[in-house]
Image (tube, rainbow, N blue to C red; front, side, top):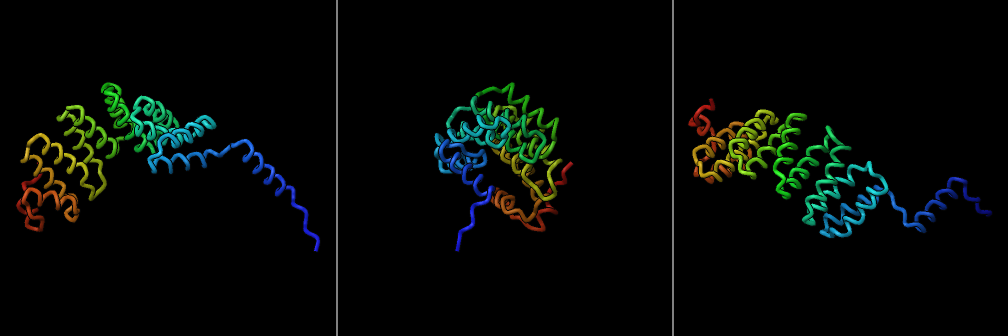
Length: 226
């Protein structure tokens, strides 16, 4: 039986495969995968090499910029991380991935000690998006930079924009008040968390840490939030 000749499509695919093998050209998807896996494995040099090649090939590849920013944070180079993350944010603003990029960018600025730039980024995120995650991020870094009052306000705004049953803002408030030695306000925040999510394991665990037993009678004994 005579074998059929390869079609033009198969010939073209074969030639492309040979060209890729000869030149070492790799797709951005492949390079991002290599960078991602290397980052997860802790091989930061390999991750950086792959992701830099990806952004050189396609400067509009936001995911490569983002992952490169994470790599540079891991290598203790927050300025380099900032530059990559700002590229990612510019390319992917107001998208589902934006909060993750902003989280990493805020961390890069915090590690540089660039408080003015950090505050500007935090404020802009709250003004532009105004979601629970934006106020949670703002509260976290205001607390880290010593602005406890600002952090309290940010966490209270985060609670306002949280989805039903999400106690994260009240837990963060409890942590903040606990760090300040304010036991009363820490417990009050946990009460608010319990009202929001009475079956949440972390909330119940934290209450027990203050020797408070969660249950139906607890709500009755709680002071009403003004």
